[in-house]
Image (cartoon, rainbow over all chains, first blue to last red; front, side, top):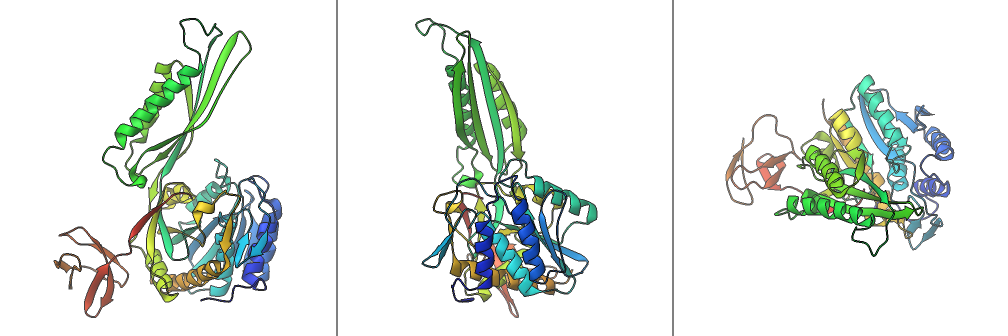
Length: 364
Length: 55
């Protein structure tokens, strides 16, 4: 057990303060400024807000950068901040202010480490499809030099390490036709959207034959369907999303979605594409985490996730050892019951600090 | 350096600079294994892989 789970703990106070500052995507300025002050107060050698609006803190001057990349924005939905029965409630408690607060606390605890420059990033707009903050960080380190390791701040559970995320593709369908009487022989415009959806669903069903693991399946979801008209023209719009597994032929998926739209009598726009990413397990970073979890009394396991994270952006861009790590149960992401167990949060800080020291001990 | 697969008893040759915590795959049964000791070389089942939804 790391420390007692009381509200007077400075690491708990940091997270509570972060939760009390609302930070929807695109409205993160107040929290960025707060984090710069918090990192300065904890002895970070540099703390600043970059041009994208990311809050960044650095510890150490070594030639080998290690990036701890969390995000500071949240989805909407105010969850009253409160500490109850050792659980801290608030929007972003697990997704992902908890993991980011743990990055700040663990980096301060680990202090300057030989050879390393620890860079904590609180990125903006992760919950928006733009991933503006992370794309700016990805470009920066492509220019400055690729990090030796990266930890993404997302909930994995304190004794779990996430090593893979599925990809994503979104598709907006639209069709229109002249208005007609429903007693007539022609189908309504809504039927075109249904035909499109059934065609892409059938494509996914065929792809998934023989694939037992969710991580390996191509999962479609119909997110929105809406019809409207002005008496002369009737229109239908629909949005479908795809969770894309690593082995999927994305070019074929794109072509199928477009062809199905054309066959149904509509057109489609594809966007928000993120490639799936599976990280290498056999790295100094993964080894450091396995050792750190065991040193804290846990039995580590790896995780692969059906969602996306900033690993999908920086993983392919950097190609460096990478994992996602953070306390919390990701099934609470975006829910009205979002909370983090304080004991687990404190354990994650101990694991992170131990892992960073272990990484410094690995010779390049 | 050689070690025994705890799953199928196959003898596995460990090449290069072997490290504690390294993950290797048994060429006989395909099981992922972790190097848990070097003196003598010892392998155990690697941490399992779980699926989870969300971010």
